[in-house]
Length: 65
Image (cartoon, rainbow, N blue to C red; front, side):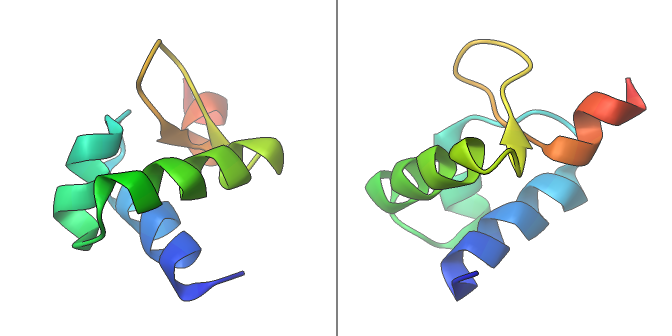
C-alpha cells in the first residue's frame, strides 16, 4: 500500500465518522484530486465504504454501526 493511501486510511480511522473527500484532503495535506483517486482505489479493495452519498469511511466504521 502506498504512503498516501495509508494517510487517507489513517485519517478516516482517526475521524471515526464519514468524511467528504475535501475534508480528507485538508487533514492529510493531499490535493483533492489525489484523494479522490485514492478513495476510488481503496473502495475497490473494500478498505473504505460509502455509508452515504459523497461520504467515505474506514471499512471498520460499517462494522461498528
